[in-house]
Amino acid sequence: MKYDLHIHSKYSSDGVLDPERIVRIAMKRGLNGIAITDHNTIKGGLKAKKYEDADFTVIVGSEISTERGEIIGLFLEEEVKSTNVQEVITEIKEQNGIIVIPHPFDELRHSAFHPAEEDAKFIDCVEGFNSRCVYQKYNKKAVEFGIKHNLMITAGSDAHFANEIGNAGIITETEDVREALMKNEVQIFGKRSLLVNQVGTKVLKLWRKLSYFGLASPFLNIFRRR
Image 1 (tube, helix red, strand yellow):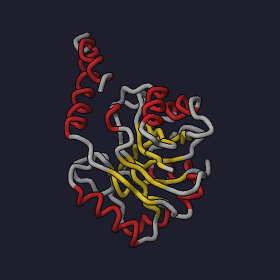
Image 2 (cartoon, rainbow, N blue to C red):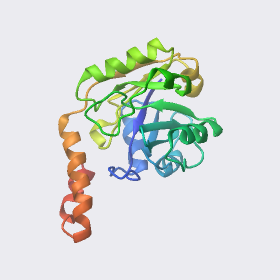
Image 3 (cartoon, rainbow, N blue to C red):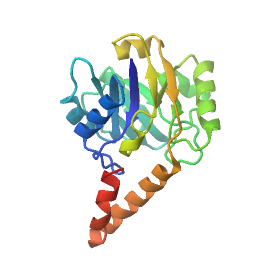
Image 4 (tube, one colour):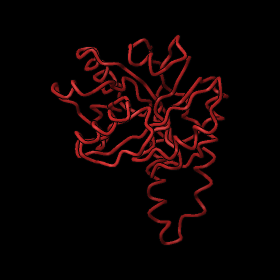
């Protein structure tokens, strides 16, 4: 069973993909499930949930911005409203969700959460492979932190464009992915995303700024085809 646990839809500020299209692509690429982890909202996950079936699971998640960096909550049912680290953790736990630190230690991302030793007590998982990490030393450091503190290690593509879906994730023998994560009975897999995708995200953010002035509409279809 293969799952990509970090994907963004059009409900992210830097995403363009329709949730239904994400599910279709993931199925074609042989995945058994995905987690939609849009920035600061579960809307994409809830929309994608409508297209799951007996052979394909959609996990509702969100990548939440806090004053210390981003935290992913998986298996959410309600929006996480806070931006304070401890309050975000509480909101996720109250939903019986799983806390994942995505792309920790990545010094190229201002949004990265850099967990300290004392943070391990509230973390369930660290993302040991993120396809968008330019330097593998950051993924390696995440794995080392997870092993040291006996944390579950996950992986995800961090896909913003269609070509990235399924680039990374977890493999488990059980159909209950939540149980597999909690028991740490998973293996991670992954390959790096093409650098053009990171560039594409930056251009997309610029496009959205320009859209206010009516200058960006000719470029939107370029990103939808990616």
